[in-house]
Length: 214
Image (tube, rainbow, N blue to C red; front, side):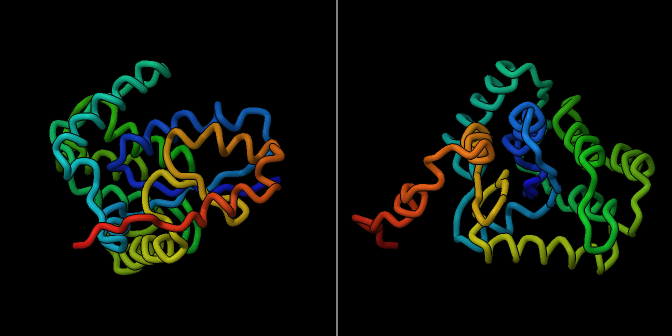
């Protein structure tokens, strides 16, 4: 059985859609999945990059595309009134629902994703947030230094292992980034011959041509 680690930030619509589609993509495969929350903004900072929502034309395209993808796959998708928003309270709640050193359950992650991406309400509205916290009944205090450190550590370790975006699914030392990598992930898990040849490593070591100067 293969072990997959699904890295995500609740702020990402692509992470939400990938989360919803993952069971279908993995159908018939012998796998177990753990769900690792992290702070996407921390990855952006580590790689000196901007998020899609920080570049206005890209932001417009992103929300057109994700709404089309949600419609195509029959996934309920309601954009929050403001995006981007600060996901820290939700990510800490997600982390707090896991035992120390562990990861949250899929059910917990589902409840949090639906809180953000279904209904079109403010994810950080205090009454909604308090009700969500009461319903999830976290094992640890989301506001504790322990939980805050765990989330920071997960983000730092992810960047150290080369993660640059969410969702990223890690398995057997390989990383599959984005909603559109689910088919590629499934092909790898089914033992497609391409992954056993030189193509994977060779494609990842293409020398750069021109480099933009800052």
